Length: 90
Image (cartoon, rainbow, N blue to C red; front, side, top):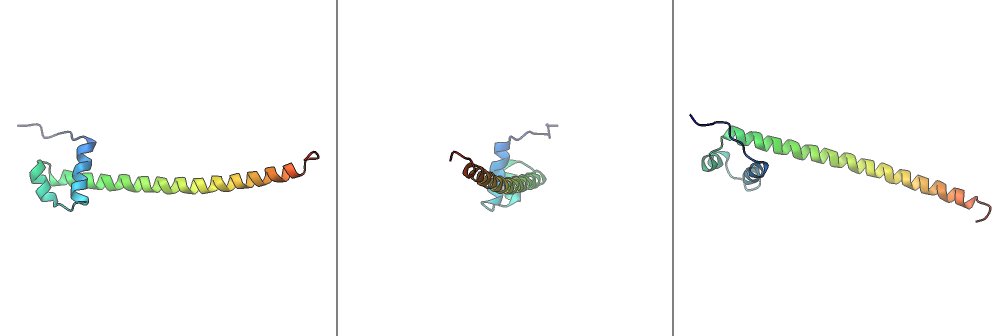
């Protein structure tokens, strides 16, 4: 009996997911062509979308933090300008 636990690298998984999602190929036909079970491919698609969701969430968090930091910088620059204008030798 052969080894049923095969390892597929991330590049192979990504190319299969791309083939299924972007090109619209049927899971059953890809399974026959590549010899990978349909269940495995469904799991790869699910994991791929979870990864994309977490990346999108992190991107939104970073954008919000960037807006907050820009606002703080504007406030700090305004305070520095006020203090400079109050110096006796300006």
